[in-house]
Image (cartoon, rainbow, N blue to C red):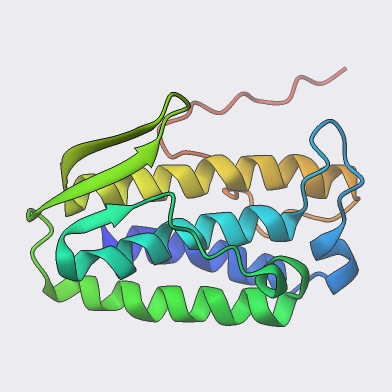
Length: 165
């Protein structure tokens, strides 16, 4: 599980290594005017919440740091990715079946539910893929090439073949 998450996060690293700060922070793409950096920072904030709350077995997904520099500058985004991947490697030696309380705001207030750490990591991984798909829309509109053909695709999603005209 950890290897799959790390492999996916490295797709983000490859993208950041191939774009400028201007492209990373560009908010011109409609309809949401979000940036690649905003999505990347958000993805990594979720992992940071997991790392920050694990010792007390209470992960608050609303306690995101929202580091503006990680959202605007590729160097800070890359450092955030590297830190996240290094911390994730430590998870290879801990019990992923341990129970943790997870708190989030679902729109009508805070809700806390019990998860296993493994289920939370699966959710964080799927969340990453979802945001990579949103990033794919942004980079396509900015004329940037996807870092690889699997960027933003959930492995369980059937692939449609392009129809030739």
